[in-house]
Each structure stands twice: as C-alpha cells, then as structure tokens.
Length: 306
Ligand SMILES: [Cu+2]
Image (cartoon, rainbow, N blue to C red; front, side, top):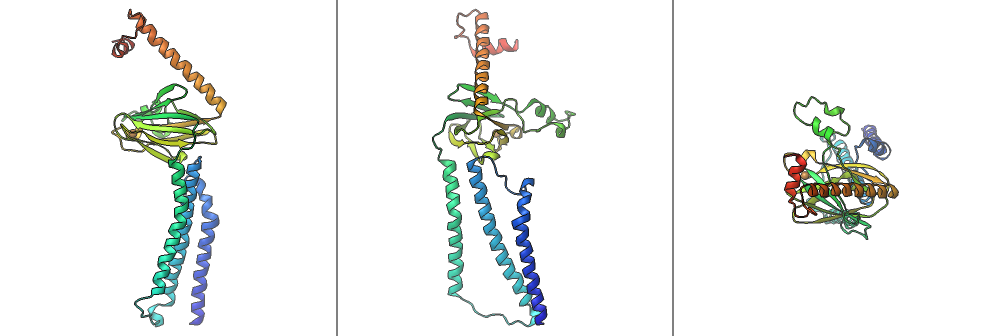
C-alpha cells in the first residue's frame, strides 16, 4: 500500500512539473497566434499587458496549489483507504492565513493596476491634438494645430461587398470591414492628445494596439493620449452599439516617420485649399462678389446638379 501511495504522489508531482513546464516555456510561444492578449504598440498597452501577465501568473500559481492540494487529498485520503477525516470546526490560524495572503495578493496587483490607470488617464505634455468626432456611421478627424479636417468612412470595396446579394465574396476583400477611404495619419515618436466626442449618438473610438478605448458622447469631450514608437498601420472599430451600421465604421491609424507626416500635412492642406478655391469659383459663378452670403444648401444643389 505504501508503494502505491508513493507512486500516486510521484505521478501527481510529475503532472504538476509538466504543467508548470508547459505554462512557462511552451505557452508563451502561442502568443504569436493570439491566444494571449495582444501586446500593442504603446506604453499604455505594454502596462496593460504586464498587468494581465502578472494577474495570469498569480491565478496559475493559486490554481496549481489549490488543485494539487485537492487532487492529492482526494487520492490519498479516499474512503477505500479508511482514512479518518479531521473533525475540527474552527481554526483561527487558518482564518488569519487565508485573510492575510489574499490581501497581500490584492495589494501586489493594485500597484501595477494603479500605475497603468494613471498613465492612461493623465495626459503628459503633448505635442499635437486631434479632435475625433463620431457620426452615424463615420469618423471626422480635425488636426487642431495643422488646420486639417476630413471624414473617414468605410472603404468602398468593403462597402460594396457588405451589401446583401452583392455577389462579392467578402473573404476576397482585403481587410474586409477594417479599411477606410481616409485613414488617420500620425507621426511616430510624438505624444498626441485626442479630444473625443460625437455628433448624434454614443460611439466609442477603439484601436486595440493603442491599449485603450474612449466613449464618444454627444455634448461631452473625453480626453486620451498616445505615443506610438513604431511606424505601422493599426486597425480598430467603433466599440459602442450606435445604430444599424455600427459594424461598418472602422478606424485605420497610420503611424509614419515625422518627415513623412509633415509631407502628408502639406498635401492635405493643399487639397483643402483646392476644395476651398472650387467653392469660391462656384459662388462667383452664381453671381456673388465673394460668395460669402450664398447658403451652403445652394452650393450643394449646384454641386449635385439639381
Ligand atoms: Cu459608432
């Protein structure tokens, strides 16, 4: 019987060692396949990731201890072995231990959690500001310092494929429902402040790689900030159920080197100046000296040929 017990304990210990080995060495390899939480590209997302990993490992250690104790007790103290159960009803020592240990664990978790939250909520000295406005069902971006503004809508290819009986296979469309006509462009290595609001109903601006999301609420301005170090294209979506086309207002953020960003700004400013000049010509064609007194609706009618 003693031999059998030794075998059971040895088997349990071996199983625990294999489980620990798998979790420590093999499981991290799966992060590339996105079983784990994505790591993101900002300090905020890194802090969230670290908090997630600390919490995960605390859960793993607790799980291994609790389940080991449970299975070892079940096997070694089973009825067929005539094990006599302890008959105590109260243990002050046990109660002190199972109160103090969870408190210590909670305090250990509260430190990185508070650090991450403060980092997300308190914007540092930022270098530029972008106002983001949610509409049903598109986003408007206004670059406050550079005087640029534009609307970003679902890309025409995705828009065509999403129609019922369109005959287009959505899986053949690149970045289906995650592509836009005018992506938001930001410079790398730059602290950017976002002012987020909405014009009709509540939306939420969410790019997972940045590590946060913010509600866009009509009449309120929510602040957020980011600093992306690596250039790249990051995609997201509206994260608040905002009407029938909620699933069709994606976000595309292109982070480019600073020089490339300055070129893009100049290009956008030229484009806006040309559009403005086109409007002035239309106004003059309508017989107005400056056109300032022409109602926008009239211009829209002229533009659409009605
Ligand atoms: Cu929305």
